[in-house]
Length: 412
Ligand SMILES: *Cc1c(COP(=O)(O)O)cnc(C)c1O
Image (cartoon, rainbow, N blue to C red):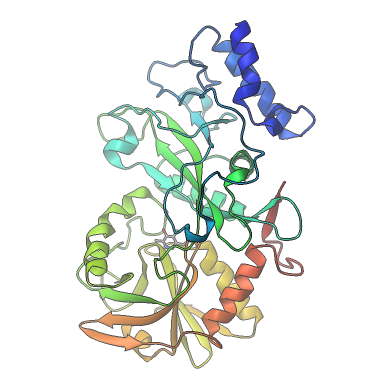
């Protein structure tokens, strides 16, 4: 036990050790208690929950030095980040069992690493799972980081959990967990202008189940990775191809929630598109094969004569937080914004087309290919998409004189 006690300090980031630093102190007490109850167990298991018959085991804490106060992430080439996976130091984990009656207990920060799952877990067998995506930017003016509308991601996860028959963390718990994950991995937040720390919250059915039914246990986990631009084009305009054979969603399906089940099915079309030199696929509605829906991981807008239009979200389209924010910013800047059916004819006639999403931000589209025909759109300076990109990113990166919308949340 003495060895375990003396090891405690080394397992935790210094901000989590200091009892005077708000939640960090709580975390230290909780984790300390967890380590104490794990006493003699050997590896210092990262679990404050008592062992349960069917519980999946939590990752182990490595005995590593605290590096969370280091200035930057080691050997990273910040100028060539892209959207690859760079493993970081810590991930946040909590589990919800039947005894918890739908409330997730306070989670823990564990070393980033593999997790163990039952072969019969709900997520592995029946895709009972959701994800989220958010970014933390380094603040330009002073120390600390900024998150963009994190409570919107929390609420979207709650709506998705309802659809997928899962319990979800509260909004407060979700946002707190995201903050903890940012702070624990602070050395991985790219320097100003080089990118962001991408945060990936997951909510999955981790308990075992054989017959088709909701899993008996759920895991809420957040990991992080520093990222640059999503598309290999960087900030350059992208080239889309319309698919009228494959669809990503259908009425009554799950297109409107960020369930993991929506993404593997688009890989076939995406790979075909990439092999032909396109950046990504633009999907049409599966009923009429005539109305725009969205791209595999971002929403779509068309601009014609100063009017901005985007498909309305009626269950088959993911209600993007970037989409919602861009609609509001465009209206503030005097544009008429329509959420309606946007047909392939509207697209063909458009002056500009652009995509929105946390990962892509606002991406101008230079061409769309539909039934072998290639249509070109305006990109570059003096476009609506450029104006909206600048307006949005100055808020997200904390560069706007003031965030009059109250959209950013400071983490320090
Ligand atoms: C995540 C996602 C978006 C964008 O949502 P944001 O909240 O703006 O990041 C759009 N479409 C799909 C299919 C997505 O998965």
